[in-house]
Image (cartoon, rainbow, N blue to C red; front, top):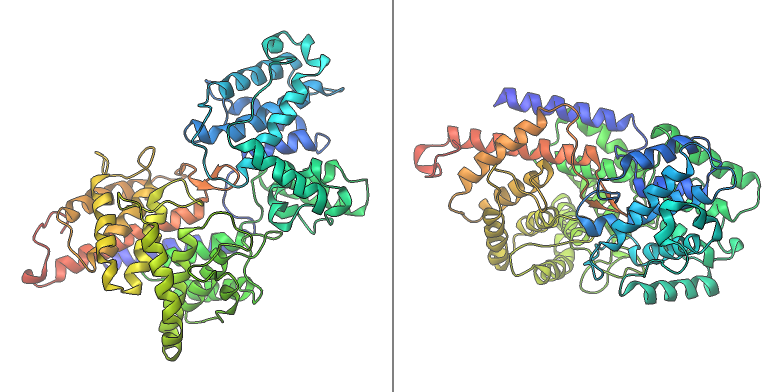
Length: 537
């Protein structure tokens, strides 16, 4: 066991050190975001390679993006609009017009083959971005210049795309508000969806990327006169492009989110002492009395604020809870001011943060107990009949369910036992034949969450068959941890799906270490205290 602990410690130190040296965050480039920059900032250096990259990313069915078909709607629309913009350009460069037009036509066909009613994922501002892109595409298709491209024949003039049901009304409401009031800070991250409705003077020049988004920044540039501020914005885009090989992520930098989520994950089985000083330095840098932002240019939010409070308490440096209180709604925490849909993971993190803070400051625990109980009540009310919890920040219910189970287990409410048992039953019933778990296919990330659900539930109740399920899962996690450069599927929600590699790696490492610790505990326990199954011991 000491050897396994040393291995975990060295891996954790290496991961924390790598993150500490990278101010950007380990996410892959976004097809949606890169296509928006192609369309909105064609003069930015690297335009031709970006066009070529878009063509290379197109799938056999004509679509773009990751995940099942509904998730491919937005990236496909973004790529199609970017290609049509290049076709209509007075000075096209790189791939020829015919090649661009053929790819756009295949993308349009893929969009038409999508189910007209969804269900559409609850990604960031999809109800605004989809209608905006469809308007732009239909405008392209109505231009005489398109008709000379044979491969676009069936799509030109009068054969445009319809806005999916339920999107048009919301988009028009937002557009009307933007025309009268300007774009609120809430929309800066997705500014490319509303910038045509906003007077340029209504949005201040960004200090860095607008809303942390390359696409939003490119949209601001598209309507801004040349100035020192626009030159600065171009410099920011070029800097991001250099970091991502000429391409763009949906948010940059993701330093705060990555550091908080990695530290919290590694603390599950025990944060190695060699990591503690670095994590404390992160908290000193990230914690803000005005609330924590996931990235520069975003609004402060309860999720990041709660995680900062949680990690601070876990490393023995508790911070004031006042910034978190700003988001209190009376029954639970709003993720941010002006939120449309609640987040169970943000509230699970808040419950964990309050619990960890109370453990550090036991004399204050009683004062926070009523609010903690209300959050627990709210979380229990959100559980689905099958025992799982869904959430808007992640495509997989295994992520949200693990967060809720962990928070409720630490909170220690006796009346939560039925909910925890239901969650564990759901996990046991959904394990795949190869020992993994996953909403679309088995993944190491989701398997890590499932393992943590079963381990947390077992602290207060026994589920028959758990040993065998965990033994099979351990093999899945071991295989992933031994595969250099393992590419984790994109499951996290921003504008489209993304995969925060370091955060996922930390979850896999932590779950694997927790399994090893459990196995060692079983091996050394007296015979009468061991599990009767014996499969994994």
